[in-house]
View: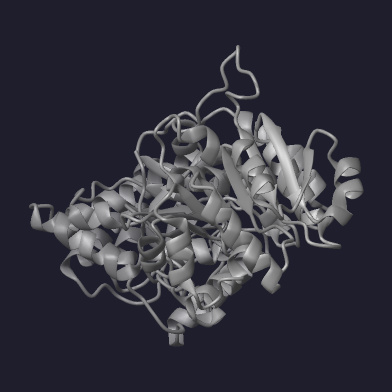
Length: 508
């Protein structure tokens, strides 16, 4: 079962739709709190020898906390509730009475090793104030002293839509309900590991329009196996066009990413001055200089199933001319990255005409996206879950907008989100490796009737997962990430857990 990524308003709308089917607010609260308590008992029983402290606010998030308290008490766990504000709804009041009747005490002790944050929920916004802010500070103190902090739905003070975190609590584990929140993926460092729990939200039209979170099971269901009798033609042929003078490294990294992802035949098309460097670094690749004649363009087109354009290309008029000539003479699938996009800055119409609705992926980071569509980087980041929708429709291709998280836009308006990765990817050349992975998958997955957006999403997930498999951020290089790709590709899918929609692990 896939989980959707939602803003605060979208989550509230999904809950309202669910309640319109006859589910009461009290029942939804009971589902959330009971499910959260079950996860706490399953995952962190090692922290419950001295009981648990639960910080509750006055809203529905506090009500969820009271249900958690009742469930833990009924499981025999000493449970203390720090009531920062009294309930303000009948459902919360009822949950409070039930928890106290089950044995929950009101007031913090000093020896609990597990803290539950149920102060503020998805609907809160702005910096916490007053007693709530003081309680968040107290949670932070307890965490600094060694307590394990679990947030109910979102860490208090974290904006569920934007990820803004002024005065926000920091959790080791966040148990979120029904959907993964946009802000959680933007500010993963505040959320720790994120586990989305199924509380039975209605699968309505709104839910179906939301971005879908990509995880290992989603990827494994779409990546075609390489058959035992495969030859290099079955594994497909990729040509990488880039590598302007002095920039051979980008094409080398792209090629390495492709080879580590199973491409059958690799050709690197670069400035002639880079031939020796490319041959030395990646002997498995064929080399061709930038085509300057119709015959050379024909040779390039005849030798590829997919062409990747952009790594290290440069943004000169010569580079723009080269991209135009290739796209005009080659009608097959393409992946365009980096300078292949920069040469079309502010000229989306020309790129759309050249692409001509062929299977294609573009892979901009936020700066490149801004240049392409005429927005500031800040505007792209502030609207990262929506910024590529119109561009994907206009170009007729998949738009892979890199970042934390990465969002993939399809021409039909659907969106996919990959939250894998670490800051080890925040280094020059990382995007070139991703282009090699995406190009390989585009070539191989079209035969399996998968869309370019699916290929892009699988590539983004595997790229990020390879970084997660590296032990460290500081000290990790792209060589380490390339070396981790075989493990990322061949990692078994986790067994689904009842009631768990998805998990996003924090690797720092």
